[in-house]
Image 1 (tube, helix red, strand yellow):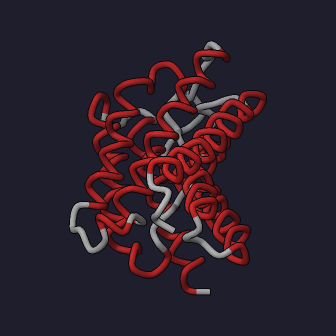
Image 2 (cartoon, one colour; image 1 turned 180 degrees about the horizontal axis):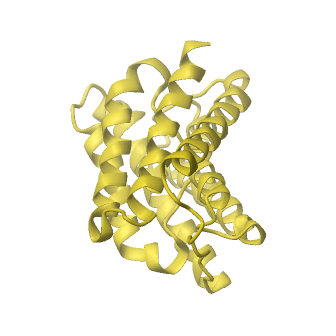
Length: 208
């Protein structure tokens, strides 16, 4: 049960950071750095308890790779979405969201952007946090967090830069993204996670 609670906590602070830094008055151009850093510190804080997924797409990838028990998958994902919803509620209480305007992305480009950088995020997670060759390293949290920083700077203006279905739920509740567009993240994120797992297993066939 504690690992689910840790997943909720980590996802809460990730989504809360998104809301606090993106909704004005926010962090402006530094929002991406704050968001990636929040993921990094939560991965270091809870990685030894739950694995520090904080992302249903990461949970999918880790499960496909064989490092997350099937019995935990639904619990992890529910905890992550609950953390995102709770964070959105706290942000709405703390900040004025009445003037928030939902993004209007190009659908094809947005799906591709989410797929590419969710793939990158999950691929990095699998390589730095689950691979035998990198076992015991001290940089896993930094690598994971800064993959989100890179993705947010690179394609945040195209898709919103969620790379995470729990974040997508949070930004939808906050009004930063339209409910009708949540499929962009669900399709792009889960496809990116699945692809990352497939590529990892192809590149590391002996790492069972």
